[in-house]
Length: 266
Image (cartoon, rainbow, N blue to C red; front, side, top):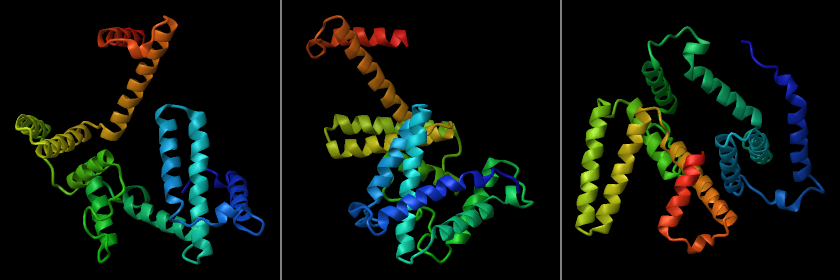
């Protein structure tokens, strides 16, 4: 099997591991020495989100920095587990390597698939075999409970589809979407706030599936929309300031005029 020269990364990786050992060793950092794998979870999530932000913004310098931060925390957690005699980083890497080879027989063996769906079917079958008899033997048992709801909706729809439980066609999803919209409007008209919230959730869940079928990841799409809105709004504030206008005192018509101007300049 050919690939990159991993030896090129070895000195930098060893240097980072040496830093972690120094932080956790005698005369190291008191704060670091108080940490546990559990206490590092929030920091891992924060750094991961910062990495995602850098990637989605196309900021390679930010991605470079945050990738290092994420890797540091992963190695830090691995070291904590190793100090507990739970497992080593090598154990984890070997387990992952074996799993990836097992789940890609079309790359590492002579297995062939006619299309992507067959590939995913084999992936799910392999996962079920791996998890048989464990607490993860259900289709959704491996789905992290802490996933953000929009991302979780995508993963639920994706896993359901891989296991054959989904609409037969995009048109069927669109029909369901129209039905969910009507049910939401009915709930709103009845002034039933609880029902309206539930129907709105059903509509979003179905919309996520329609996007998935079109190759759109709802979480990323919404993130891009958020960034676009914030960028345009900031440009509006800047434009208003350049013209000596107090942005907070502008009425909606004036704000809309600025918004349209900012959009036309993009």
